[in-house]
Image (cartoon, rainbow, N blue to C red):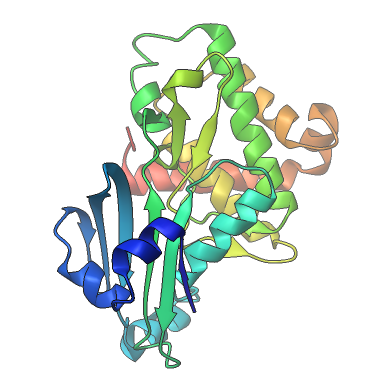
Length: 261
């Protein structure tokens, strides 16, 4: 499958997109054995490309034996982005995608997205909160919006799997309204209905990444109230086991990994 928007179709002009992207020079942000992420410019606009090469059967089997879902290409992120767009959750804008090869161990794929300009990650935006607390109204708005995004994802069968503050981008030109874009969806899980363990994984990751921000108990309860369809009191009673497991998992992450900020 291939998709190129008009600008990239004209730029590639019938050439093999894989060869064209491999030959491009750009600012490399991440590089692993089977995946490379780099930034480049086309017609004065900034883009990010992720190139996936075959992960090999050894990597696939290792993930299966560890009860993890193997990611074998850019298709997972392509589908997740479109699912978030259907759910009216701001995310990346994909402009090109391609995949070739039947064998999942050798499949090649790529995805190109526009750079989200004039944004800052919530990790960077919030890292000084403990020493320099923000305006209470801004903090309440951010908690409410993160809870709304989380609820929408999980009620509609989407688990991010790397659900940390660093993957929320705050649009700096809309701070008075609060617009957050969720990025880095290459491991996202999209199902009809999520098992509870996936919900716990996401929320625990989010909680872990916010532990050093000086959040109060009231802030945490505010998140639960906006996340839960049944309201705070009912959620604390009915979903008590879920919130206890979230707390336990986040604390273990903190003990094993140390502070994220």
